[in-house]
Amino acid sequence: GVSLASLDGELFCFVCGKEFCESHIKPCVVCRRSVCKDHGRKCSECGNIICTEEDPLECAACGVLVCPGCARHCSDCADKVYCKKHITECSVCAEKFCPEHLGLHLKYCEHCGKGLCTKEQIRCKECGKIFCKDDSNECSTCGDDICLEHTLRCTDCGKAFCKDEQFYNCKQCGTRVCKECASFCAVCGEATCRGHAFICPDCIKKVCNGCLVETKRFGIFKKVTCRACASR
Image 1 (tube, helix red, strand yellow):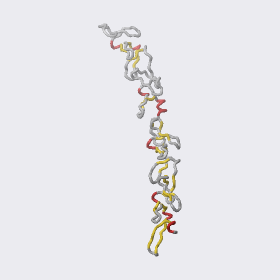
Image 2 (cartoon, rainbow, N blue to C red; image 1 turned 45 degrees about the horizontal axis):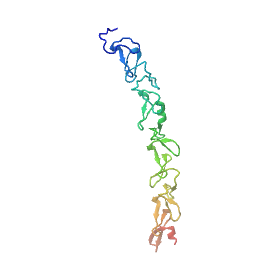
Image 3 (spheres, one colour; image 1 turned 180 degrees about the vertical axis):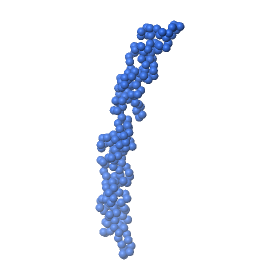
Image 4 (cartoon, one colour; image 1 turned 90 degrees about the vertical axis):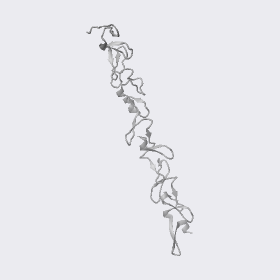
């Protein structure tokens, strides 16, 4: 009801054609034409006006109105529009996802529960479950990924292996050693770890300590040798 002192500027609503003062007429952020409050809708994020002549952009998750500048799109359903609250950017791949597709994109480590992007998910070849890098290993021989539970580790070299690789148990202490670290006694043929493999001073062959014997010469001088050399 305010009297118009001047006819300068936008005074008429583009939709209804009625006259309004500057306080009651705003430009549409899309078409830039002025509209009154009855024919303008406010963007829920930036507050800009969108006229009723423009197609409404509503968040597919919550239904709030957003202008083209504030509208966000999911990488997996680009035809839909979302508000800022319902779009999440993956910190690893930088792709943007709606709540539904974020749940499909992210998997959680079975051990620590950390959310993992598809680019950092590690699937154990034995159990098929998803793990993070810190809770998994790579087999030193075949290169396949294995979780901590299904990792076999050599006592001597400390390398990680999957169960498909060949291992030996030390005859003396029972520890597990890989084929590269295992020593085989020249007398009994049994496998031993490095700590229980000895060199016979006579034949210079590796033997386990169970196949070493102590001999005496003249009842005084003691000598350690393997059983094979002692029997000659």
